[in-house]
Image (cartoon, rainbow, N blue to C red):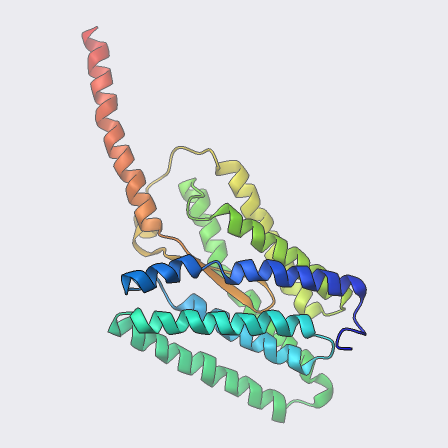
Length: 276
């Protein structure tokens, strides 16, 4: 059997990791349904989905080289399919400039860089260390993109608002990090476990921020945030460099309008008090 040599707890955590990872992979569905209906990608970026496909492809290749990694194959196969669909829809409805840039990145990273890694792994690395070599490449790719969610954490602290860091997704990302961490521990696959330590720390930090700022009523204005922030990239599970789109601009604009409407009300109230 494919799973005959796996530790029972590794199998259990791997199955749970697959289940929770499905929710993470499917998180962008509402966004792409909106893109499909509007026939426009609006201000959303394609890079998170390209990185997600690149990461899923690398983990799938790693799982195919490694023995008893069936649960990594299943989730990353699903990831490759879903991310390919997302990217195809993006290219179909993006403006010409974004379409061209997306295709360029896809060709250079998802085809070119992956092919280079594959050729080096197959022809320049000894068979005895091939899995380990590829595993550490995956660890490096996962860790290198943690700067993005960390920047979002900084924005949450600065604006004192968690409106653009949805709790359900933060919760599921934390759970997936836990599941894949313990999968890596019991399967003795530290290339899987190590990135999820950072994923777990990041997830717990997001939970703490939700607890601290969930009732915050005041949102500080941040012009740069309203101009550029559209997506958040999260890497916390093997092969899932997942992005969840957030229309921070619209959220912040609504907050600004509320503040603008609130100011005249305060002035009228103060005027009435003075008259009394």
